[in-house]
Image 1 (cartoon, protein in one colour):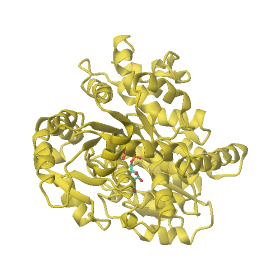
Image 2 (tube, protein in one colour):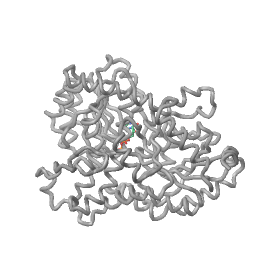
Image 3 (cartoon, rainbow, N blue to C red):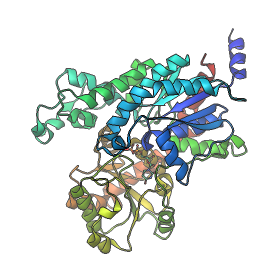
Image 4 (cartoon, protein in one colour):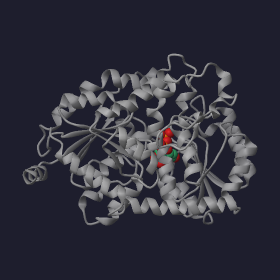
Length: 492
Ligand code: UDP
């Protein structure tokens, strides 16, 4: 009977094994989910690759395992040469697929033997590691996928197959990138307003007749159907139509975001709970520059533009220079996160022209890597120039900061489209990042014209909506409660 089932569930300790694709954009949300589950009494084992595990041991945020929350590592199978290759992310993807299943299974089996640790009862994956669905099957436990994009990004990715079958992509030749073809209206994606072809995903831009990346992405998204549930870092009010359409295909969708807001709400509502003593911050693969926050403390409210392209994007030298001179011409104050590797040829801040640095001295702070959530929530920050990665977008929404978007990869285009047109919180920059446009858009974003006033009003409303969704009784809060119930009921 139901009572017996509930009782069994109560007695059984759930133990979730979390395995994100090894990059910041996947590690950060997965870690946050781990914190939320742990705070609700679920045992968590967070699995990194050995390579990242080593890196994380060296950075300040570090790996702080504690009671019921452990870190483990498995090899990623890459050589040093692979790690330096321009296509290292593809190599990593293939290598994990090839070699990472058996170590995960072995790790899970070994964990249950340790004293005081219940056996693994479920696996939670991020996107791009669908091979681990088979590993979960071998372990005999259900799998859940935390797909790290927006719901619109996920639906766009699901529809890549149809776009390919209908002949929209791959592109016939390079001229299609610039001849207006990418503006072709697409009005048949259920749950989405009419969008342009180029808005759906970077993968429609492929010229490769084999469409390797396109097919991999579409296969990864579609494979989520094999999981017991799909977890999204979004909230109901943000994307109601696309979520409704998605649920026709995926009956179990848990919308628990914005994760950063959920963490904040969770630690404020149960501050007595020792489970919550852990880090509410991301695991940083780069050292966070604390001086940038001190610099922000000295700037007037709302006066600083924060500039960051996330953890993976690479700018050409020309884009870097255009962006730099555009920022200089805008006359605004800005904090720029220039991580090592942001610039083509594995370069970082050293690629910034000395004449530019001299010109902006006193109103610019260049950091390698920032505590981005803290930066966005700092009162001095009034705008965000972003690549429209989904984590960055949700962090900005939660902070109530309007954006200038320059998307370049995967779901960043659709995030930008929604941020500009549906949510009213952003302006779009062209990919060329021409200095005149950068200066003009940054001027608009940080100025006090009607457009800026509108965006600020919308951003303030979305901030409130994000807080309401993650507060007790909100849609994301309830969805998380349901997810935890589901994890507890999972029969190994
Ligand atoms: N981030 C950070 N410091 C930085 C730049 C980025 O902490 O200086 C974090 C940011 O808060 C976000 C993640 O890195 O959580 C980037 O994820 P996103 O999905 O925005 O982009 P991706 O890196 O996957 O392209």
